[in-house]
Length: 164
Image (tube, rainbow, N blue to C red):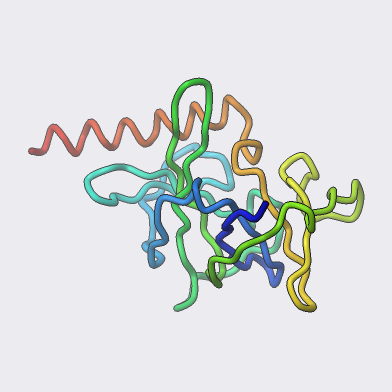
């Protein structure tokens, strides 16, 4: 059975996430910095009167950092935790396209040589001559990290509602 995936690039590597977990793709907006935040948390943005915590995937995956450019995008993802959904924005170097991937073509991720932990990877597939690493959005962050991101977003939501 084929599923739809959004593909994007981070550090010249092609990644994919299932479309059902993508809320939207935004142009890059410089987030408001937060004091004492984890190194991979760029800050918060306001999108449609909701606070969204912004994660730098290069920092999260221990890759060399890069200044945003005209291709940089924020992929707004829905992370499923307990009985709820937490929305976060992930900074990608570029967003490519939505593609269909047949589950039969997805292979298990190798346990060595990855820039990122294999626990975040659902599998690897190939399109033409390019490998695509399929990420498991729900496993990129620990339970504690997701709760922290959710509380940060809720604080900005509360302050936006107070302004109305």
